[in-house]
Amino acid sequence: MKNVYTVKQVNSYIKNMFTQDFMLNRIYVKGEVSNLKYHTSGHIYFSLKDESGTIACVMFAGSRSGLSFHMEEGQQVVVLGAVSVYERDGKYQLYAREIILDGAGLLYERFEALKKELEEMGMFAAEYKQPVPRYARTIGVVTAPTGAAIRDIINVAKRRNPFVQILLYPALVQGDGAVNSIVKGIHMLEEKQVDVMIVGRGGGSIEDLWAFNEEAVARAIFDCRVPVISAVGHETDTTIADYVADLRAPTPSAAAELAVYEYSEVKEQILNCESLLRRAINQKLLNERMHLEHSRLKLQTLHPRQKLNEKRQRTVDAENTLRSLMERHLTKEKHRLALCAERMKGLSPLEKLSQGYSYVCNAQGQNIKKTDQVREGDLLQIYVTDGQIETYVTDTVKLEGERGQSSHKQ
Image (cartoon, rainbow, N blue to C red; front, top):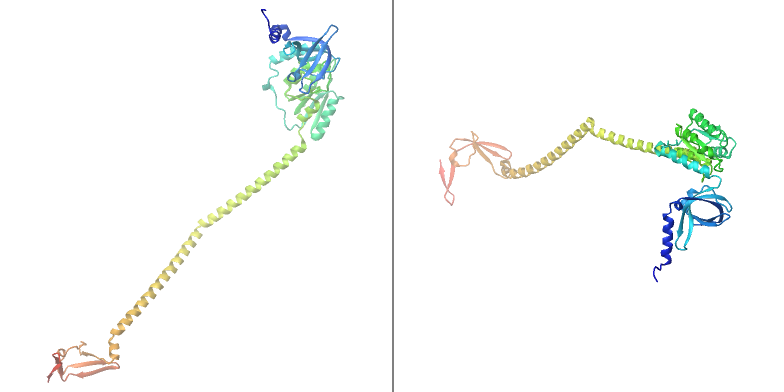
C-alpha cells in the first residue's frame, strides 16, 4: 500500500490549507449565538448558527478586549476572526478576535476607518497628551444634565473633595445636534479656563455612543488646551474620544476619581509633612544650639582673657614649683650646713679652749706654736675660755730627744 498517512499528518495538512487561505485568516461571520460558555480560564466558547448550519467559535482570554458587551444566548452578532483546524479533534472552528452586535457592523467599519486615519495623523500619540493636574480646583463637565453620569461625578466629587467647583455644560450626548453640542461645550469650558475637563456620558449601544466617534469631537478634544478626561459608556465601551483624550476613564465615576483629589488624604499628607517639618526644624534648632554652644566654648577657650588666665595660672604653678624646689634645696642646704657646723664645731678653737686648751699669739696676732717664735721679754696674749691673759716671756724650755730632754734658756 502506497501513500498511507497518519491522522496527524492529515490534520496538519488540512490546517496548512486553512492557514494559507487569505480570506479565512480575516473573515467576518454573522449568526446567532448558541452554546455560550464563559470558562473560568477567561476563554469564551460558543457557536454561531443560522437557518442552514452552525460553526464552533472560541475567543481566548487574550482577545477579550475585542468584546465590548456581555454575550448572551440568541444574540445576533458579527464575529471577526480566523478559521483554522484544531488538530487534536480534527475539527475546524472560528477563532474570534472581535465581536460586535449585528446592526452595528457598518458603524464599526466607520469607527475602524476613522480610528486608523486619526492614528496615522498622530492624534493618538503619547507625546501630545497633557498631564492631568493633581490638585484641580475647577472641573468642567460636558455631559447630559439629567443623566446618571453627572450624578455619579457630583457624588464622587462631593465625597472626595467638597471644595472643588464643578462647571457643567448641559450637552446633547446622542441624536441630532449631539456632535455640535459636545464641541461647543468643550470650547466654552476651555474659555472658562477650568483646570481639567471631563467629557462623556453613560453606557449605551454603539449607536447611542456614536457622537463620541465623530471626527469633529475628536479634533475638539485634541485641540483643547485644557487636559481632557474621556468617560464614555461602561468599562468595555471604547470610542474615538478615548484614544484622543489626554486620559481615559472606564466610567464617569472613575473620571471623577481621577480628576478630583482626595481632600482628606491631602490634608493628612499636609499634617504629616507639617509634623515632619516641625521635627526637622526642632532637630535643626537643636543641632544649631549644640553647634553654638560648642562655638561658645571654643571661643571661650581661645579668648585672650582665657589665655591670660592660663598664663597666669601657669606662672603661679611655676612659682609654686620654684618655691617648692627652693624650699627643698634650702632644707637640704640647711641640713648640710648643720652637718658642716657640727664638723667645724669639733675643729673650733673655742671648743678646744672649753676643753682646757688655750690659744697663744704675739702682739702681731701670730699664733705661737714653737719656742723659736718668741724672745725673752715678748708680749704674749693667751686666750682661755673666759677671756685673755697678757704676759711677757721670761724664759723658754725646748723639748729635745725622744725622752723629752729640755734645754733651759736664761
